[in-house]
Image 1 (cartoon, rainbow, N blue to C red):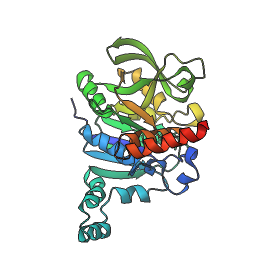
Image 2 (tube, helix red, strand yellow):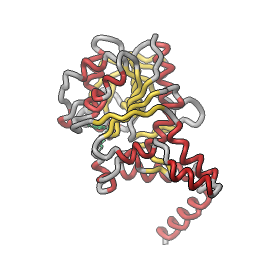
Image 3 (spheres, protein in one colour):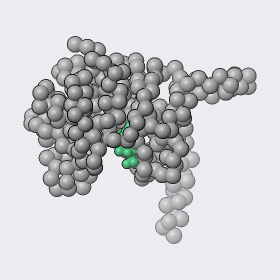
Length: 293
Ligand code: UTP
């Protein structure tokens, strides 16, 4: 069995839900407290044993490249001023992993973004982490590590899922489960964005995938699916028809930072887990009292 060493992080989307903020910077660079979302995602990949990461970028790739690069001038200044704590924070992103970049020429969908990284992946299993979803599993392994463990048991593709509300199924890829063994499912069908009321289950694909390289020949068909985009979910279903693709209900809190309300809630949650906790709680209490007057 081949070891999982590589990850693709697609970050080329327009991020229209965050305009105008995303006019010049990718939404994956928007910070939760003081760290860009993308850094949380890279850290999760590294914690799963990933050594090489390719980030699929679009027009605004400069900010991403700069963040994961060295900044000699800033490091020199912080060192001179003996701000060693800050120096560590500045150096850390450039020391996480080998990070590579490829540009998606046209925003033709998530499936197309993954296809762009084909030659980097070659003939190996790999993981995909979407920059929209941060998953925190404080009591155990990060989501991606959980998928790698399942791959090592099954030697097959494993797609991360979690339960979503009835009124949210039309926004995601949904699985039609065939059988269940604890948190692992065999899947009859993967369906992207089923019309409201038609979802075969409430188990939604939430931004974490472990895929065998067999996925690429299906992506190459460039089948246009929901929303006029080349959907990764459709290629996964095609792969599922020729080799087993499992779904795994991963443990952890998933934060949807791809839209404004999820982004604000994530920021509040992360603040409440940080040294800002008392300050933020007092401030929110003040606001609630004001609101109740
Ligand atoms: P989303 O659909 O959430 O991203 O794609 P988006 O299109 O940027 O968002 P909105 O709807 O316009 O606000 C999920 C992930 O896939 C990437 C995005 O960058 C995001 O991380 N993506 C999507 C690509 O890299 N290329 C694409 O063509 C589409």
